[in-house]
Image 1 (spheres, one colour):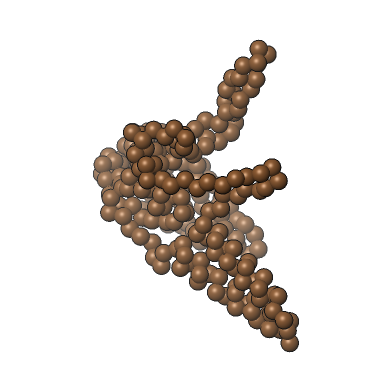
Image 2: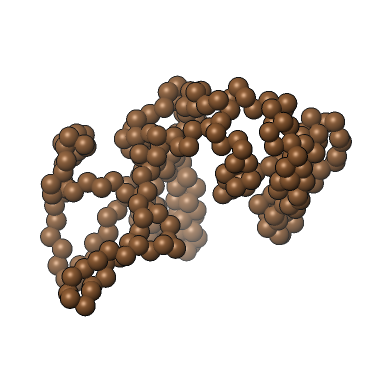
Length: 244
């Protein structure tokens, strides 16, 4: 009986966990922003807590919004052979019949792809042009001039730095050597001991947390939100299992 009661308690904890996690850190619906946020707002409200949002009016000034008609694309890149993904149902990079299936990739002139999109040529399959690592820059450099090279407020919020490593020279001095094969690192270059409040005025509102860490201690900079929910789940599960 005790084991059955503990199992029911564990199931109750597991059933409550998704609701509690949503209440703490997830909205009921995707928020819409009517203007681009500031870099600080974007990072603080959306990137850091890992929350989704839809940002309107962020690229209204891009020429592509008016220029990229079928006629324009046929003229500029129509003859060009590009990579086209093809699937029987539009689903790829997904599990299907116990397999993780990738799309078939075909090479064809872009105008032939447009013929399929505009239903001038019929096909039972689904064709689309997309690559996760941006085929715009790789396969359509002719169109890059119609878009902004970056989104400034996003670039500032997600500022990337070249990874490097200190190396000591024969004379004992240190030099900085780039790790050319490593991905760039997002970071806010603020010295918490000597903050530049002209560059980061909002940091004046920061309140430091102080603690003493000894050699045998383990320090974990806990992110609250979802991780706190997870801790609460483990705590409730532990108490449930320990029921008499």
